[in-house]
Length: 289
View 1 (tube, one colour):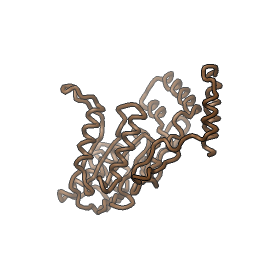
View 2 (tube, helix red, strand yellow):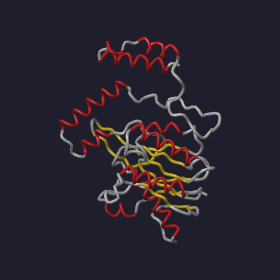
View 3 (spheres, rainbow, N blue to C red):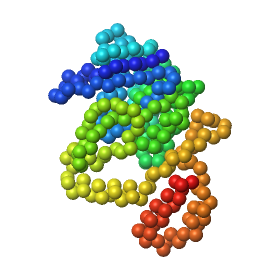
């Protein structure tokens, strides 16, 4: 029941590269490595890696040699992919609607013997909507009674990496990146663990955005990180008593003293700096609980 690939390669991408292709290993099985969550910056090679796994599995099933040093491929009934953004203007469907339709088809037809390649599910809508949908999709796939398919799941929602250890069969992997000053070097190597940064501003710089835009983006990013807007959302995960497979997204209720502080606060009288300091104070008090 396993897909074990040693030094796998993408046969098409390798032919078009001027530099040497970096091979990667893959282990998917029906036990502890059923669902791999892959994080890392854009352009680092997540999509190439996932596509090469799907291609190797397909090539093995048609009796072909495969681009790998070694491969043991279990019988796979279907390969489902949701990669890339597209819309259907003729039928009036947005990119997000097309994405949800494809995900619906996958979840309704995948079995425990299927291979799923899912790239950035939920990115076409608001952050919290997208995160909620991606979270629920992962829970559904991880549940062996409902799906249990072997899955590669790439995402920029770093909160989802909290699911390792909370749901069975989930493991975190990331694309390794080296920072050199304000620049980044893509090492193209898949390693264990979740990424803690997206490097979006650095990628935008590599893409050639004007320096003025990059400078302003860095300023805004520092302000948002200082405000700690989204941190701690999934710091504590609690499973409801009636369903151990489902996890709550926002953790437990706030402690009473923090609630009382919020009730007594005169929000209208706070300056932006005072509001930021107050938010930081409440956040630190909550973390100490």
